[in-house]
Figure 1 (cartoon, rainbow, N blue to C red):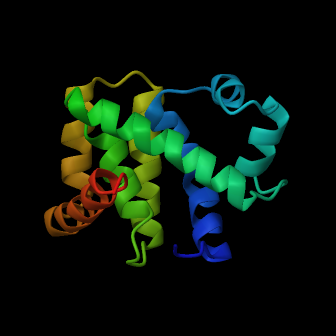
Figure 2: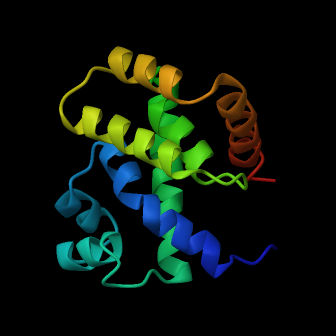
Length: 144
């Protein structure tokens, strides 16, 4: 089993607000799902609290499950965002800002069709196809 680096946990923590918003969860909803206080989740998202390895695994599992559920319903935004922002490839500040734009659009009530169109424009095609394929391979083969 591969170990989880502090950098991997920090990268996830740094992007967790984006993932939560794209999943359609408020801070109180997500806090209830993971049996933590709203203040703890807010603290993790704002860097006031650190994220443990156990929290990372639990949070990431929830987001991956939600990403696959949304993907099966035709909404690719969360899955693509996670695959890009959590990939081994360095994501520059511009890409991170673009993902925040998508998250804000979802929080503002954009439709699935609008979000998918926006992410298609923002994420270069070759990058999201490569990372999407890698992410799907990990998710689909995780039971083996």
